[in-house]
Image (cartoon, rainbow, N blue to C red; front, side):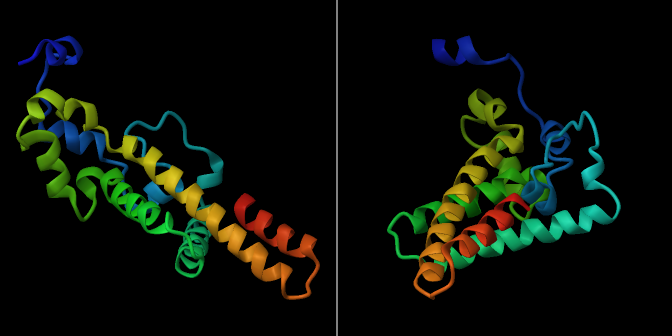
Length: 169
């Protein structure tokens, strides 16, 4: 092993049990809601009871708005951002997602995983890439929606208020 790997390695080999532990809250809906932490320090009241269904609906609606903008807006960056969103969404689910076996293999059994597997053992790290891509697609979708509303004869403040309410919701 190189001196760099020895300098930054914590000195243990990641096991499948570690990956499963760190992926225990990484369901698709928790990833979309940003609640995919492997250890939850507190349970906010916003995510319980009837409001949970509202948050689930809002997350799916916002994702749908981003997808709509991605399909209708014309920008060369959108395919790349879309790929980053999809790949990071599946990687953020860790061993609980549809690519769970692939994720576990990458972290535990892939060539060189003994040297770098500990760096990606917690799947919520990939959520940062997902949220960056999500925000970028949201910006493209918002720009497209505002352009369409501006040309339709409706007051500009109405379109802005609709887009801001979707983002804040």
